[in-house]
Structure formats: C-alpha cells, structure tokens
Image (cartoon, rainbow, N blue to C red; front, side):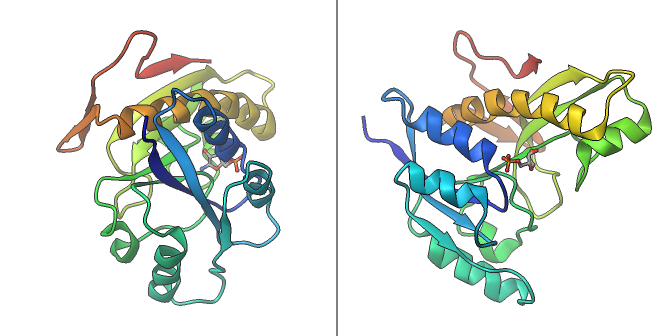
Length: 210
Ligand code: GRF
C-alpha cells in the first residue's frame, strides 16, 4: 500500500503528533508522517518526531511578517499531500492554505462552534457547561471555523480545574485525530457548504464519548 504523505505542524509538547505517529506506524494506516515542522525550537514535538525517524524543521514565527513566515513554512513542509495542525499556535492565511485546498486539518479542545481560539477547556469551565470536548475540523481562513469532521465529549465535573478538564479532553483527542486523518486521506469526507459528510466504516463514529 502506498501511503499518503502528511506533514504535521506543531508548537509544543506534541501528544497529538504522537497519536498520529503511532497510528501511522501501523502497516494498515493509509498515511505516513513525512515531516514535522514547528515554529518554536526545542519543543517536545521535535523530540517525538526525531525519535520516530521523521525529518523535522523549525521555522521561527516570532517577529516575522505573516506572509514571509508562511512562505518559509511552505518550503519546510515540502511536497506532502495533507497537513495536520496539532497544537500549532499560529493562524494560517491563504498564503499557506491555497497550496493545500481542503487538505488541512486541525484539532481543537472544545465542542466547536463553542469556544474557538485559545483556552477551550478554561472557557468551558468559565461558562459552566456540563459537557466539554474536542473537534477535528478542516482549516479555513477563520479561527477554528472550518467544516467539522468529528467530535467527542467528556463530562465537566464539579471540582474540575482547567488542567484536569484539559487532560480528560486530550485523551479523547488522541482517539479522534487518527480516525479523522484516515477518513480524510481515504477520500471518505465530502464537504457540502459548511457541513462535512463522512462515509463511515464499521467501528467508526462521528461522535465519541470519553
Ligand atoms: C491540544 O489540546 C490541541 O487540541 C490544541 O493544542 C493542544 C496541543 O497539545 N490545538 P499537544 O501538543 O498535541 O499535546
């Protein structure tokens, strides 16, 4: 089986990257992680990639014009088919996105469209919701606004802290992202307006409960 080449962009510790690396290491997974690019040096995501034998690059974003940064990012990403954002703390514009139309995915720690942007778990706590969760979605030029592929929910407990809730959500993220990537690279997701339709296989769901 010829695997589809995927680049992962990250900014931090890289546990979602790890979930994708672990999935991609299985012979029957249709994608391989061809490259990991971060905008910060010394982050955990780089270590994880190196341990898995995946080529890495660092493209610093700090103090740079967005367009220059994104052009360098495109060079670093190289000729891959899909791009996964995994804790990548920069908003991408058409400079980058136009190279991968409909082929950039993101994972967000909230039940979108609630609580886009940063601190999803903290916002969920502050709003007093009873369920929080995670979303895998296509990336468009907005902040966490693209068509939703799958979501998962966890309860919000009375004595939750932001960290405890974020950790509960993270466990779910690691199940959601590899599933969505498989569906995406197998061409089983169709976007109609702002809705994604997924051709599900046995054992898959668009909604997980953690
Ligand atoms: C995750 O919560 C992800 O949803 C968000 O940033 C965090 C990244 O965590 N976009 P990690 O670096 O994958 O561990």
